[in-house]
Length: 454
Image (cartoon, rainbow, N blue to C red; front, top):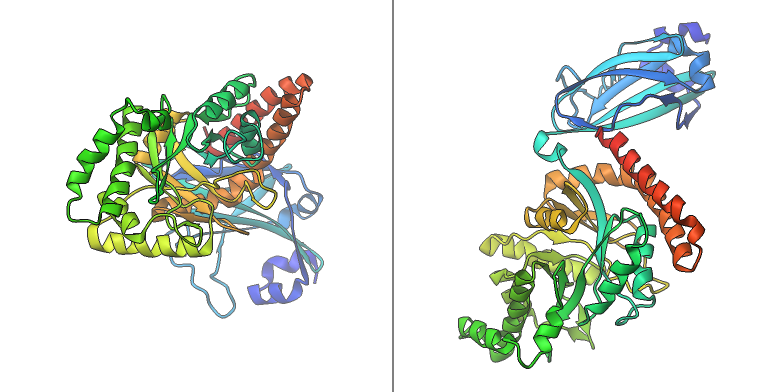
């Protein structure tokens, strides 16, 4: 069939003729921002950069659909036997080396634009994905990080100053060194990272715990001082607080009452120190049994005296039980807490740093904005083993899935990985890389601005 007859083909004839489809990247320039305001009219003026599209410029085919099965005129994109109405055909024209067309991106949705030409029996195409948001979410920037890591300050494999570099290498914008019952390593990490103009935010952090046979772990994030030093100081009011809280738990077994009271004494102190408290990895096992008795976990969740719940260091049994308990708590007493995703990273060879993390929607990645986003439930916890699964409010998870595929993996994370590599070189003594670290900070910011239209 001659190229000039392509426009007269039915969809079925076209599909039968195509023997191969090749996806291209970079066939066009001047692509608009990928995240746009809801109800936006977009004028596309795409500079053609690919030889196939230049050769068959008059036969370029542009199609569109959005994720609610509607087309730009709000009509249903029905799937008919010949697939004629699966996509909306978009009027377009070429002038010089530029492709012109227009679309209305209505509502808060993901939008797909496919541009293709046929050379013989091969279809060449480039697909573009966009997301439109209502203003309340559009106004925020997007960041991701892991706030539960360990160094040689407790049971991690790397010195404190190296941990943030590995987190940047994994694609993170913010992190915290949270060693067990010790605050000093986080200060060392922050001091080391202050020498680099990287853009990575490192929060104060520590992993506190109730002690004895009722162990629970609690992340202290952003606190101005060590909560563990206060807990173990014989002159502090820790025991006094515990006894006062135990009075509220009269009627419960002594074991649960004691350790729930310890947990809440710690979280109350974290709040006083300006920090965020996170209930770590419920249903983790130690010596063949749950570190926290199931009734104790239930009491902690029911009373809710903490800021966020961690879905970190993802394992199937742990996540299955936490999911079941949260569903039960929602039904029984309207449980509602934001989820934090963290890897509980120790730098072990078998442990992936890139899978468990938190996405926040905030003005910046600085701790005050992180804390405000978490408390306002503008965050998504991501966890997994071989793949990443986001958890949180439906609207945010849907948006996060788009970002994970089209922003973080393809644009953001590779730049962060390059910068993390350079920071590790600098930590090992090569200071010639300092300008390149700063340049990558600029590139990351520019890539973010282009993607989000900032």
